Length: 67
Image (cartoon, rainbow, N blue to C red; front, side, top):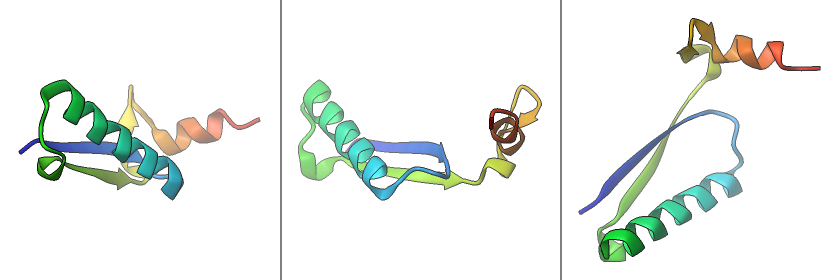
């Protein structure tokens, strides 16, 4: 039973998340021929003030990139 967990910053629409989950499910099914009913895929979202990369919070990076 394939289990796929995706970590994302908050901010995607329901439609975007559904498209991602659908695409990942299809990729797992096609690549390893796993039965669809055995594939589990979920998204873990977290706020941008709880994720840091290269010493910069994602929330601060987002603010710095705004025009």
